[in-house]
Image (cartoon, rainbow, N blue to C red):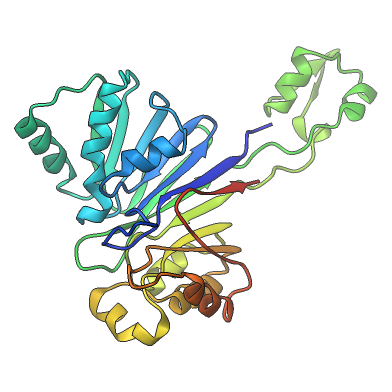
Length: 303
């Protein structure tokens, strides 16, 4: 049985941090691995508060090279070295990400206690692991920006011990093999997993938009997401400002999620002008039935 996933919001503010909100940083914890999406300045402070641990298997995905989304990586790498991290870290981001990190490490002359592997990304599948893959799609912002989609692979269905017993399959290794999706042979007769298992269970889909206008292309990309985290910088009365700065309003995010058949929408990246995000939440709720406004240190279990 897979451990559940958990989404942890370390920073939910827009370009300017406030006393309540740090700049963008989102972690998805899956099977003991941490997938971090963006790391605005001071990300390691929010990370410290979340008790996630400094030596976990980790990948960092950067949506675009604006300071409030990537400057935090530098402090993060430094803090992890001071914590004696040994595990490698993989970093994925737009063209220029290598230069940003390499130049800073060189100028500030700080050594790292662990390997860092940096991969510039284009559209398509950028990570393919045994249990999940991560895909990217171009977003619409003032610099090259990517949105990310984590898709779990299908999981085996429910195992029915009584069916295995009725087929005289001895308990132990053969049961285990069937649960892993392998055929087994008992008394010269081969038995398929489907004879003792329920149908496969589709994996979850988690989308992270980064900074963007809502586009038709992204709508197709995020189709049927279980959870979608979407840019919600402004309220709808500032739609003109959203269009000029290539961000989205809460209402636009909700309309987008509805068109894309998203089950649960999570709003984030709130402009510093909003002391209370409920204005944005209420606006989105007029359009979509399941909306959450993120706040720093919010944890969501993905079951």
